[in-house]
Amino acid sequence: MMVKSKQEIITQDIALKIKHQLYKPGDYLPSENQLAELYGAARNTVRKSLGDLTDLGLIQKIKGKGSLVLDSSRYAFPVAGITSFKELNETLGMKAKTEVLRLEEIEQLPANIKVEQVDADKFIFLERLRLINDQPKVLDRDYLLSPPVNFLPMEEAQNSIYAYLEDKLGFVISYATKEITVRKVDDYIASKLKLEADRRAVLVSSKTYLEDTRLFEITESYHHPDDFSFFDFARRRKI
Amino acid sequence: MMVKSKQEIITQDIALKIKHQLYKPGDYLPSENQLAELYGAARNTVRKSLGDLTDLGLIQKIKGKGSLVLDSSRYAFPVAGITSFKELNETLGMKAKTEVLRLEEIEQLPANIKVEQVDADKFIFLERLRLINDQPKVLDRDYLLSPPVNFLPMEEAQNSIYAYLEDKLGFVISYATKEITVRKVDDYIASKLKLEADRRAVLVSSKTYLEDTRLFEITESYHHPDDFSFFDFARRRKI
DNA sequence: GAGTGGTCTAGACCACTAG
DNA sequence: TAGTGGTCTAGACCACTCT
Image 1: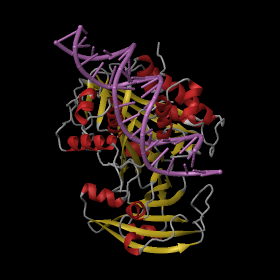
Image 2: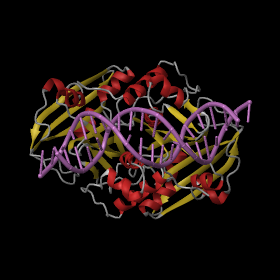
Image 3: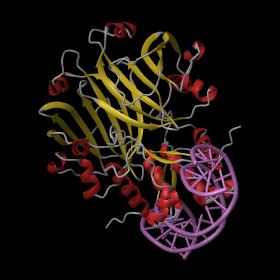
Image 4: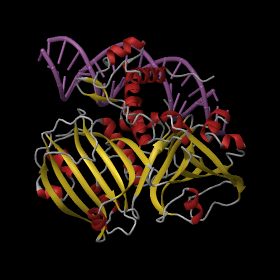
C-alpha cells in the first residue's frame, strides 16, 4: 500500500484546484502561511509543494506578492517529461490505436544504436505502429534490457509498457535522456508511416533509467513530420 | 552587488567538483551530514543543493545509499532549458558566426504567430542567420515586445541578446514555453538555409517570460533538418 | 545496528511589495 | 508598516541498505 506524503497531498490538491479553476490564471494562491494553516503543515512543507508546482509551470512565485496562477491550459500535459503514448492519449482524449508489429527476443542491439556499457544478456524487441484516426503517426521501436525486464506479455505490449513495469513489476522509473533529430528513413519505415517522396521522419531517441540508475529501455520513435509536435516548459537555469 | 546564497555556493562548488572529476561518475558524494559539516550548513540547505543537482541530471539520489554521480558529459549543456545560441557555442566550442539580416521596429506581429494577449505598443524585429563553418544552420526571428524592451543596439544583436537583457538591462528571465514542429518553408527561408527540394525545416517556436510573468520575447527558429538536434534530460513526474 | 536519504516541524531573519 | 516569499537552522522520526 502506497502512502502519499503530506507534501504530495498538498501538491495534488492545489494542482486539482487550479485545474478545476478554483484558483484561476491571474489569481494569487493563499499565502504560504495561510496554506500551512489550511493543511495543518509547516511552512517548509507547503513551500516544497509550491516549488513542485513552479517546476510544472502551474504557478509563478513573485517575491513580496505571492504565488500567481499561470495559464497552463496550453501545456499542462507533461509532454516535456517522460510520458508514454498511452498516457498522452488519455490526457488529450484522442482516438488512438496501437498495432504491435513485432515482439521478440534478440541477442544484439542494432548497430546504429549507440550505448556506452550495457550488461544485458538479451533484449526484448517491441515494434509498434501508433495510429490516430486510422492514420499512422508514429513507429515505435522499444528495446527492453533483460535483465531487468525478463518478460513482456503480448497484451501489455498493446497498452502502456510503463504501466506494466511500474504497476505490475513495481519498477520505479526515474529519469530519461531524449534526443530529437530529423532522419531520412528506409523503405520499411516510409511505407509504414505513408511518407511522401522526401522520406524524412522525426526521430525521438530516448534512454530510460530506473531509480538505481540502471538503464532498462532504449526507444526509437519515428514520427510523421506533419504531425510531430514537442511542447516544453522550461525554467531558466544558471550554473 | 549580487550576493550568492549559501545554497548556491554549495551547488556550484559540488557541480564544479563533478565537472573537474573530483567526484567522478560512479562515485558517491559525501553523505548529507558530511556535506553539511563540510560547508558549515544545515542539512536542509545541503539537501536543497543536491535537489538542484538532481534536476540538472548531475547526480541521482538513492535511498539508504547516497548521491551517485552520473555520467553527465553527454548532456551537461543545458539545451533542454532556455539557452541562447551564443551560450551554446561557447559551451560546445563550435566555430560559429551570426549575420544580422534585419533589425527594425514593426507595429504588428506576423499573422501566423498566435499569442493570447499582448499589451505591447510595438515590436523590435530581429532576423539573424546562424552559420557554423560557413554553412547556414539556423534562421532566427526574434520579436521583442516594447515595452518592456525599448531599444536594441546593433552590436548587441550580433551577440547574445539574453546577455544584453540580463547583464545590461537587469532583466530577470524566468521561464519559457517551447514547441518543436516540422514545417514546409517559403522561398526566402529555403534559400537562406540552402535547403534541398523538399523544403522542410524544423521550427522551434518559443515564448520567454520575465520573473513577473510578463511576456517579452517571441522567437521562431528555423533549423536546417540535417543538423537539428535537441537533447533533453527529463525526470519522471507524476501528477 | 549504524548509516543513508526522505519527510516534517517550529522558529528565525531577510528582502521585497504595497498601502 | 504589515504581509509576502527566500533563506537557513537544529532537531526529530521514518524507511531503506548494508554488514
